[in-house]
Image 1 (cartoon, rainbow, N blue to C red):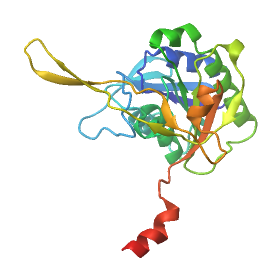
Image 2 (cartoon, helix red, strand yellow):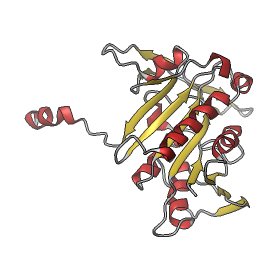
Image 3 (cartoon, rainbow, N blue to C red):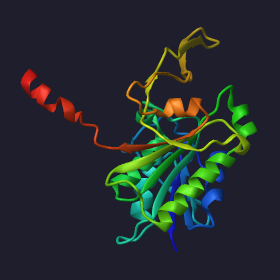
Image 4 (spheres, rainbow, N blue to C red):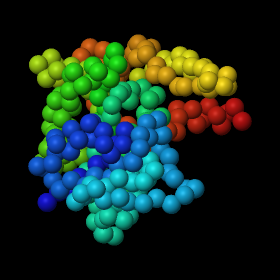
Length: 260
């Protein structure tokens, strides 16, 4: 039987995680290792300053005490699987919110998939975009996200993973119902525009503190004819983006040599 390793960055009790498990649980043996508390925007971080502990909540379902998504995949692969064994697929999500454009550098969800491909396991990150507050997320539900991830999983299991080494698939689902689903667009990562969302407040003692807010989904339009992920979402399409971990700007190597 195929095996799927699942994590997320919203925590072990997230509705998105439950929806993801429901979408694929009849396709493979599912093992879940998720953070104990929300680790959104934790990026590709490992915990090196204190020990981590698996807490088994039920068969094949663990929370990792104060772990990040990267910790969850790294330790699951090393502790829950035999030396010569790996899962057939890593799924990370379903994230409660977008992971578009440069969000992938912040995202704990995408980082879970990154850790999977580092260890040679085909990996997909899945995020549910919402607008107007989290209530709209639950109004639309996860039906489209479940359909897309199920279809991708079946396609991989029936054939092969379409990308090479250290490459993952980043999926973003627009805030639509199944009736409004228009299909999938293969996209590039967009050029997202970020504003100042550091909000200063004062506590009852008059001391200042800051709370980070959420940025609007704004971006620079694509001019090369290739639709970006943000444009696809705005048009009501599911965005499927191939991501690779080599962040080298290859076209600038010769320029930098000449500059030095």
